Image (cartoon, rainbow, N blue to C red; front, top):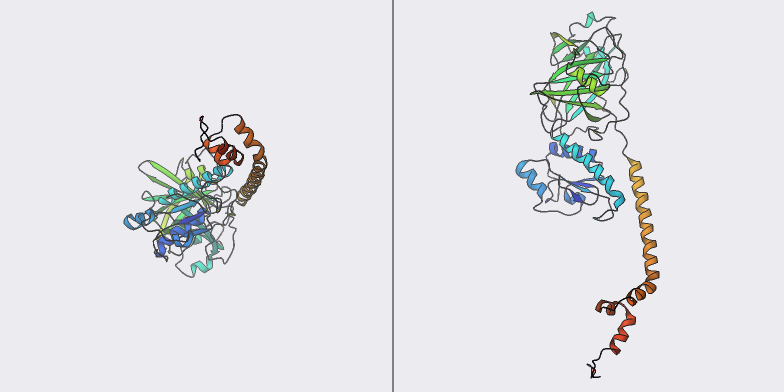
Length: 398
């Protein structure tokens, strides 16, 4: 990130060109970053600042090293390179968030989508999963499709990812459900309203899809999903809710995301998935370059609301997490302070002009006039000519 000012824009390669020459896959990456940044304009230099720039650092980093490099034009859209003091804190805060998001995207960036669909229609497209007829209470009417995506620029760490989902089974039902993934069927049980299982590594810009067949006694609630990477003794837990990603520590003594991460990692016997048999399934899929995801904010900004996915029949299309409105109140307050500052400035300038005829002569009267005073104050220029003579009475102009 090469910070520039000003204009609230995001420029990216190729800045020497008059047209957009980026490959579609990299263009999608920049589009996702620009959406999170919240800038109104993004693109090459000709598309943002209105001119081309040759020899620019972003172009070299991208061309020579294939680094996803960019130049955020931070600061207000107008107001120059030196914004008012009242706006500095907001500019710093917003760009700290943006920088942290870019750090996140360099690794694994979690995106979870889910939707319920009719089980009958699902079975028409494939074989009948083992254990379906043995579910307590009978065969349910619908199943939940979950797609776990890695929008980041690096593959996930470790041989497997630990997944915990809260909200599929509200409460602690004793009846088991089924998990379908990668051609296998696993039995699921809920512990404290949480189901947990494992999926394979997710390559960069790829996704994995699983299906959950709930027991009849399960009830749907507000979904929260956490995916934990574990390798060489280190654990990083990504959690997704309402399109936002947060980090959490796998501490089972704390409620919320931390407890869900502990369940995903199998801490204190939280593991709830048991393998049964194999059925044909869907393997890992690569995300198309044109896919647009509703990632709306950096990972550490925890959303106040969550995505509600009720049991809805006949809904086969994956529902993306709902995007949240931007921080409009902050912009409004900044604009108000800017107008107030401009008004105070104009009043101050008027008072200075009005008082100049009184203040300047009195300031000069307290000391000997300087050469600069003679040039600036018309009243002193006349007396200077009259007194410009030597002690012998000869005038230099004679």
